[in-house]
Image (cartoon, rainbow, N blue to C red):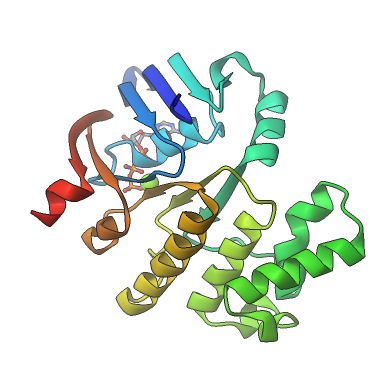
Length: 233
Ligand SMILES: Nc1ncnc2c1ncn2[C@@H]1O[C@H](COP(=O)(O)OP(=O)(O)OP(=O)(O)O)[C@@H](O)[C@H]1O
Ligand SMILES: [Mg+2]
């Protein structure tokens, strides 16, 4: 089967003053449908930049990024944004919930953007809240939830539209290790069941065991790849 994500010599350069930063430097990567991939590496190695390219948040300086058969490097910003809305979910380290809205309203936000009527939005949001174990917190505002609960709301919002691929940049970075593991277990359970492809940035080695493959970056290049089977040896 054709990979769901395929990059060829993907590159992202930043020009700062006189110097050129090779944030992502010739990445060739294939990701299978339903695969859980972890991008690791030290601070500044290019993890977030690569994630932004793969998710279509940014355009590569050179190279190809093909997702679901669509060449993202050929799309303009508006087309990329439409593509993201249709196929991609995001989970953020800092949750990014809207403070003035309740948990269910936050979860339903992507459905509202798609113009889905209120009744259907609420039903769907409640189903997903149930899935993340927070149906009884539907009316809480973000400040009335713990960090782990806020992240579960963030996850619910990311998956409410049933995206093919979910990207997460340090999703457990603000959580204690126990809560972080619970969040990863929850994501794993849902995505394995749905066949969702999951790409995660983390420098916490505890998180790697939830994934099928780790690619470690150094200076914008893939320094090492480790498959789950190799890790278990
Ligand atoms: N908008 C930008 N303009 C200029 N340089 C940038 C920009 N974004 C990132 N960089 C540079 O690109 C390199 C990679 O940055 P990136 O944010 O991808 O690292 P990272 O691996 O996610 O690090 P961290 O673990 O600290 O989040 C760094 O040298 C960074 O300074
Ligand atoms: Mg980063």
